[in-house]
Image 1 (cartoon, helix red, strand yellow):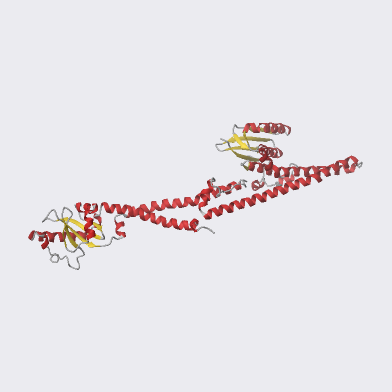
Image 2: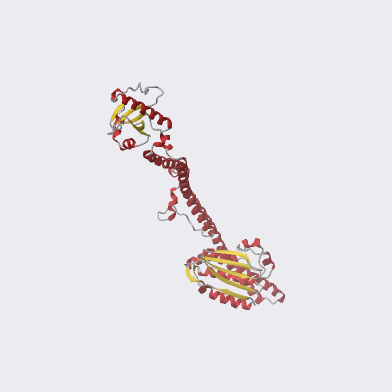
Length: 470
């Protein structure tokens, strides 16, 4: 049962609402700050006109009657149903001089706040909301310059008014930036485990069947992916799959090794029987038959030997361990032997080595290169070459011949066990179909790659690439 908190669906949904919340806060906070700094834009033309009309009436009344207590709101038409505000007069000490309607005590207490002080110092009419009361003003009175007129009415602050202070282009910019950043973080959190899974598939595809995604060990770098239940379960299924594949391949290798071992004894007895029969037989007509039987038994013995090499190569390599070699030191003897054999076969041999270090299993890599070289000797018309190249990451060993080559659609099948091209089956040089399969297995053990291509103008080019030790 997946923990709902660790569910991928819940996380995506939660991330969506979190993105919306961050967008709103990213717009609301600057809008609130702008509203605190400047509220001029909220005073529309109608409110400005009302404020000017009331200030003019109050000034006229104070000119006739300086006593503010004689101001009658009814005569100023402030009690008209169509007039939406009440009036108050505040002196320079921020004290209430008069009001057309009683003011709540909570609002009077806010007269000592900094916000109200900044509001009263404004030279132009502004709008501010204090204690759920909308204030418009102030306007200085001509009759008494120390007094300022303010219109007010009870009004709850509306959330949408907060966003009116923020420009539309600013909202769009904030929305695009926030959603882009949040979406990138979400995609990154999804892409990282998928990338790790892709790397694991590539490793298994290159033959590293023991590759695991360890989300259980506290010291494992893959531990970070265990926070998501769906990905953790996916990684567990991947590990189970690779374990079953490795076990299946290991069983096949063990069965092949057992079969090879069991065939050795009767084959040896058959060879001994043929040898005794040749000694005791006086019939000259049976000699060709004995030679044919001996040739087939030798071929069968070679099959068994090559099959045994293929199935036991990994075990022997692990016992010997990986070692660090320079490329010229590793291949010098092999190239000298190849040059001697090429001279016997009347084939031109060329090789070029480079000074680069690789860390490999010695026996498998020498077996791989030797099998490819011998395969080139079999089909070459007149020349075989071995060249080495190095890059920052890899060392490439390329073996080319000028033989007839193969069909392009057969290149991908050359490393299959017992596979032989049509020309190989029909010619005397046709082998067992195991040499290149053993080479491919040896390359895999050394974490390398093998690639087959057509040589120009004719022949086969085989490239073996191995990680370089820096």
